Length: 442
Image (cartoon, rainbow, N blue to C red; front, side, top):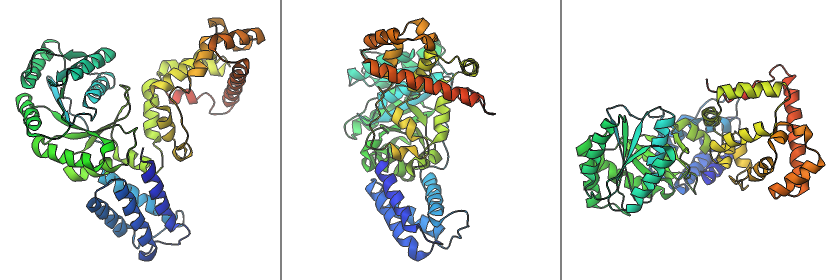
């Protein structure tokens, strides 16, 4: 995500390396390169120029203290301007009502239906609400079936009326049903089109008038760049939506939509989404996104993802086992499963400061743990609980059962022992045993 923009900005900051202070002369090349980087990222030229003019005004004549270099100061200035451009602070979702109504709008193919499922999952698991999904796309039968399947996966009710071709009455009926079932929020997935047309705009406007939603979220395919921004403006002029959702951020995203949309429609980006997994939905934080764009990682989001998956009581039990040097293969497998739930492995590693650039050209598959899991799954319960009892004969059987050769099994066993030795050493340190607690909920 934003790899090209990140590289171009890093190149721009290099113009200031070795300089003692920021001057109009040495800043000119840097600002020019930043503007080019933004335009190449599909940011509107007018927005890019206003952005760099503001950066130049703030940077020119700025005093550089001994502790930092001019290039570091420029990174700080650009970071502040990026945060401001994308909305300054995170925007809360209004999910209060009886029920609260959230209307989802956007073009066909933008990821509306998948996002609707992700939002229901988010509201249920992270906010403790009782959502209902509403299939109001009467033109694409596959959308209704897709929503039904998503609802089953997350155990959320889905209101579907296969014979009703009036999306307004479907939405109104859903509100009545939600009250009878004590649902406190409903998410209405509306129809999209391949392009903006009057019939679509009128239909979604009629739904809005009929149900008076607390939130209208416009879903944008972030890979479409400036086209997405122009579409958002057309929708906002008609619907006056309350927030934007950027989807497909795991694709070839240049960054134009994320950087331009708040400026263009003056509405906050509320969520970002990547992939098809239903737990890959995050609140949009402008400061964290700026850090990612500038290659600084996003350790705050990484810790939050860990806290969502790691149970505090489980962490305490694990800590005790590590202290007693009893960490076994069953524990190891459990940790792998929790890491996998956190999301795409490469995206997670990129959140660690300094790691994103190092792994940019490395293909890290989400199936990276499959070989390890196959080896552990081929062990008996006794072997998983007693790693030291796995002799040569047992290793041969494990290799055969997992479809691996004996060298791979031996290498994994050696790595596991090295990890246990490292844990033992950590326990002898003053801060020993603290690591598992970091994942626990507070």
